[in-house]
Length: 423
View 1 (cartoon, rainbow, N blue to C red):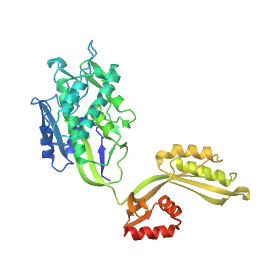
View 2: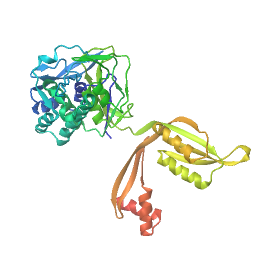
View 3: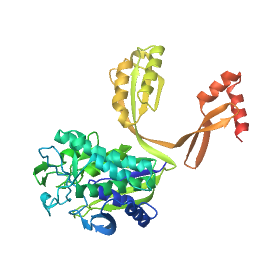
View 4: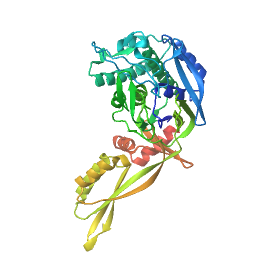
């Protein structure tokens, strides 16, 4: 399984994400050519080398009609609602220093429908990428709609800011399609703290639209003052992430650094790492145990089934001698940490215990996959495992049990026939 891990210790912006991904593809220059060939109105992509805190990376600049929008590293969607309730999406940089006033630009605006027209006009781009671009943009528009209390179809974006955002979003979607990871894991997102000055007032960090997009996403604020995560960066992470959390165990094949414009004591970058599975996985496991001496065998059997339904990796019983010389049963359940609440509820609901013990341990497991093979009996699933210098395979019990019953054979006979058939 190919895994992409995105580390957001300094937040995320569209161009920073695109820059990090650009360092992972086989031919970055060709990828930039493909982006330029899309014909985004007035847009040119320029790859630059950048160094932050001694770390070399890439900054992908987006030029709109030959000029970078402010410093196009990040865009905060500073909103202005007119009497017609049209929200103007304007872009500024991480430093929050406004180098130009909103009204210096002519007031051309693009609706979400205009964005769809632009994107659907791209030539030579996979349909999935178009769907992804529009999906990310819809997420941003929904956030702006919620913040301003206006329908999505009334959201309008400032023309220059729109082209810059379309370019960043398109670049990320196209590069992810080229990389084709099987799963994307994103770290908790550092959003910064404090306030950000916009053309019409001061907003808290994270800004309202960003905070809305990042609902249900693990975020935090540490020692960097300022806006680190932008609405576009937040939407891209939320849209593509399969999960959020620490870096999974993986064999890294490439690392990319996407640099921001502003300098901080900490390297201002998004780091992206891509790689495959290790031969085996180690993970933290939790074990809960309890002793009972007043449950029937039927009650225990029922409780064990409920524990597995609640997410237990393993549940088993051990006969034990208890106080007052009573014979009893030790119930032990093993599971991953995120299942703790579910397992505890099941234990207290379905057993007679009034207290449980917890042990935290490490669980090592071989890499596992299920394959389906064609046999004389039809499709049969095979579980294959590898790791620690060992490989093994095993037919799924449910499949060979069904075949044995249907054909009046023993399990050993079914396995023998399957072994000969698949040689």
